[in-house]
Length: 203
Ligand SMILES: C[S@@+](CC[C@H](N)C(=O)[O-])C[C@H]1O[C@@H](n2cnc3c(N)ncnc32)[C@H](O)[C@@H]1O
Image 1 (cartoon, helix red, strand yellow):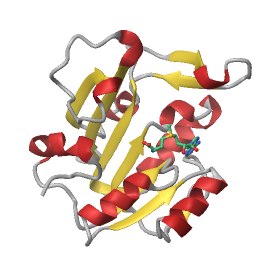
Image 2 (tube, rainbow, N blue to C red; image 1 turned 180 degrees about the horizontal axis):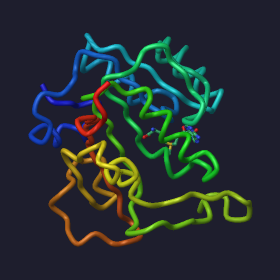
Image 3 (cartoon, rainbow, N blue to C red; image 1 turned 120 degrees about the vertical axis):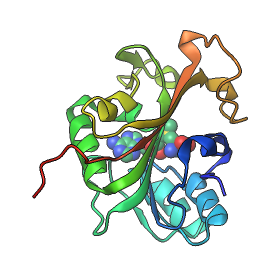
């Protein structure tokens, strides 16, 4: 069975080997829980959890979708008693205030078991870019684009099992690879990373 928490992940299966399908899955920035609802349908033995700051979205996730394990909070400050086997971070890091970004990275890391999978999806730019949010052009609202997988990969702790840069418009089809070249303003990325602590001090 593929790691198909939504149709996009079907394509990742060959890259993943044996994914953690029966464990605890957390989505950070889960909005109204639509991905988690699909995850629960596809993987009935998994337990799904979400973190979302929008109170109205949390209510929809809990009451309309029947997802009990939704914490209304942010990536930098959520707390769960037990760690997760899979953490999904789809299109959330570009919203995180720079003052909270590294705390958010550390918080996700501290909630993932060694050997667990972190799946990062976001818009992609070759380097860091701060953009005015296009739907609220007259207000002081910003998003921050970069390849967020690199924050995890470069310290050597999260080797990448799969990484793809593709056109955002092809996301829905899950067709990540067959449309090069990708227009720079329309690029998105997905990465599957495995938390690996082989290089740590033994205790
Ligand atoms: C672009 S939506 C993505 C929703 C969903 N993950 C998806 O892929 O469709 C970004 C979500 O992240 C939430 N969000 C914004 N800032 C956040 C933060 N600091 N921590 C956690 N979630 C945040 C927003 O409320 C919103 O629901």
